[in-house]
Length: 383
Image (cartoon, rainbow, N blue to C red; front, top):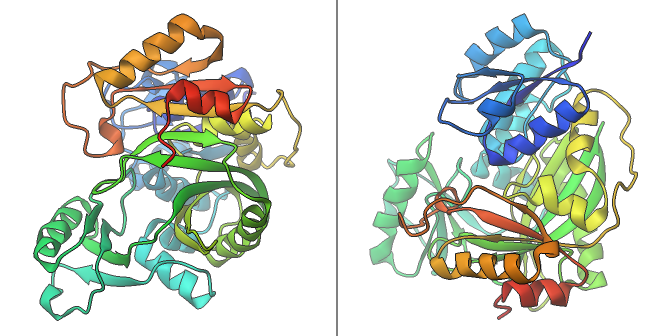
């Protein structure tokens, strides 16, 4: 009898998980809102149920009787993964871990209690009187329960605060917001995989963004340009942070900043694989480890194995915001086709304003021999 895997989400990023499971002859049962996503076509069985409808998904999952449930790259999906997984006795993180790893306010409290370095913060609701707050500007305003740069703004003056808080509350599910200290420095994400509470380092991703006010990612690169001292400090902090969030099984994606004095502050941690193809593609390119298969192994209860399936190189992803980005892709395709690892579907560029990561027009992934080669091909701004 075929093993069965429930997958929460059907978009381009989740499709890498669907395809990998099918390569292993694992029957895929995919749940997502029906909107034409690629996973609707590639899944063995597709269920047009929103990923947040965890009770409906649990009801269907009981009929499926899966061997495992999993998702990659989505905080919202992980709420359902852990809820259904715990209800069915499958491998998952606890519901308590779900709360503190998907709500930025609960996460900040857990970090403070465990002396994990993070920005100072103020918790805000619709009832908060902003005029009574003691705020040292500039600050970042963000919803406590969203990702993908939604509702994030950098605020310099009190006159801008009301508008920023209103925008963040507008996209927040629980109508709560964090006003947090703006952390200076270069931005990185740290990719780990855990099994039974043992945390294993995989990679460090260097991140490039649009900058203020929304800080939307424009590109990622692995391995990152980072010192050995910085790497060792990261490897000391992140496992403690994962334990503080009670993350025991599966992938994790930690975002942090390092300033000019090597001070590290964790911005947030997701108990899931990094989105934007960080987990699904860049980790395998830069380490040789099949990260997606490793996530499936853990969900299926198999012993985690670290075996390289390819020779490590430099992995980069570039997101398309403008016609200039698209022309860059076309030039690379014409002159350096062998460097292109994978390309997404690309929508009509310029058909809308890009105000968060979900509104970008597509992306392309490169596999290069050196960091300098990748930076030069993508013409990355290193300032």
